[in-house]
Image (cartoon, rainbow, N blue to C red):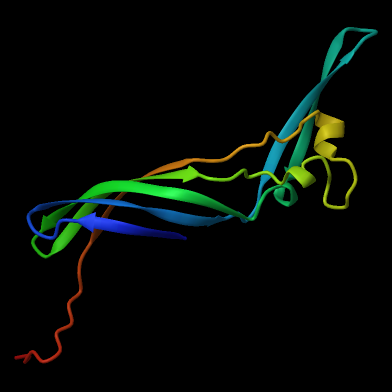
Amino acid sequence: MPVYLKYQTDSGRLRPFFYAGYALNGLLSATANLSGSDVVEATKTVRVVQATDVDLTHSRKALTHSLVLGSGVKFKFAKSFGYVDVRYLVGLNNLVKAENNFYNKDGSLSTAITTYSHVNQLFRMDNLSLRVGYFLPHYNQIGRAHV
């Protein structure tokens, strides 16, 4: 949910715009498909262990914050517009709940650690997006006589 200040020119065929602000981001789910390998010492063979998806949602923060920076240009065609928009979100906080990083939902030691030797790294996430679009304004025709 971004909130930002935007500057754009409102005349001419090409109309550049720039914006900056803040975004509140929500997480719906987080899963990982982990695998591990064991070496059998007696035969020196490697056994690969493949997992089903491991749910990591409980160890991630539901809400995160970002700075929003963007720029683009609108192209005027008669009464309609095409546009190209580049947006960069700079993550401001860690996505992993450090207190839940080593535990399952029920409080037991994480299966990801005991079975696959996987511990979530502490990280933040940046996001770069490119949008290309077209819109046709719809004007209210009230008061105009129809023949």
